[in-house]
Length: 392
Ligand SMILES: NC(=O)c1ccc[n+]([C@@H]2O[C@H](COP(=O)([O-])OP(=O)(O)OC[C@H]3O[C@@H](n4cnc5c(N)ncnc54)[C@H](OP(=O)(O)O)[C@@H]3O)[C@@H](O)[C@H]2O)c1
Image (cartoon, rainbow, N blue to C red; front, side, top):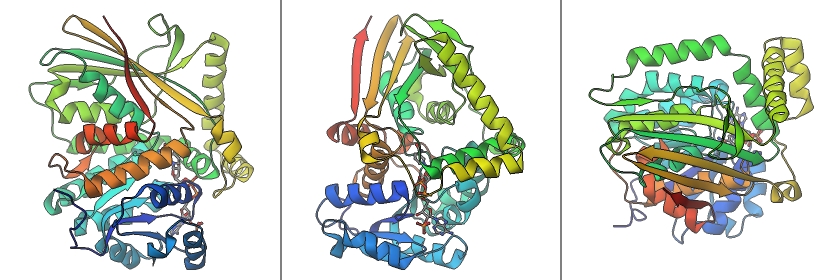
């Protein structure tokens, strides 16, 4: 049954932060790909900017415009009450995001964001998961390059392996891409909050029910030469392995004992060492307010890589899964990860929440748990590759 005609709220999807860099790309994607009859709106704090954006969207006259500001919680509540799905790009989420999650959890609106910020995701779990379960709201974080290819790629790999046996999956990420001012600001905010990130993770562990009768882990692993993919593998401590682990905890299909390890794959060892050193230097600088200010002046929010640069960008995540005597090699790949493909993944996830018949879930859920194969099929149809390279 189509969910399109459910008219309990004025809009199927409201896109908050539509005037930002990824927000505008997502609005353009929705304008080009939303099915006829989808009721959707763009939202943000600047009505004039929103109207200018709407003017350049094909079929824009049918798109609603809603004003809301993160500094005005009543406007966020109104936004949530007007939407079946609220998709927000207003980050850094740890700074701007919590009141909207609260409004969605409380009013039963589905919530989708691009947060790759573990601290934010942990604190919304502790504060809003229980209420969302009561109202039926699905709270889906990390619905962009962080973490869809990794979460759905691991899920896709698991489905190629036998059921009911211990499984291991390793993910190896390679990408060639640039980032936007908004992403840079968010990364600097996260890197400057090491203590708060650890405290939020501890608090989550205290609140999360223990998994009984099964195991699902995501150890960080050690740097190594990974002959199976012909590259050096450097552990990548992003939010992705945490999200994969949560999917594995939620779904029995991952088996009685599941382990996921997440790596950056690099051809040459000096490049790997250079990358680790650069991130270490950025993390140190982010602790010092003057250095952080200097860095954030280098790349301003609202800006991002040009269409020409994005057209040359790409990503590939290779997975090696093993269990029950089978070894499988899979890959998820696509174009510009941070922006064009993120906008596509984000918009398709919002469409899937609004339109697809999905497993019954509520509370904080991952893309694999809430959207699973429905989203894989949407992304394949939109040009993102999910493939089995070999089975041994
Ligand atoms: N998961 C992923 O893979 C992934 C990929 C890309 C980006 N991201 C994340 O997505 C977020 C957005 O990135 P971006 O490059 O699009 O950033 P951006 O261009 O700076 O956009 C931020 C948006 O937030 C809005 N905003 C800021 N303060 C607001 C307020 N007080 N009330 C309402 N709206 C407000 C801005 O509105 P104005 O236009 O009015 O300023 C703008 O629409 C960042 O957190 C980034 O890290 C994640």
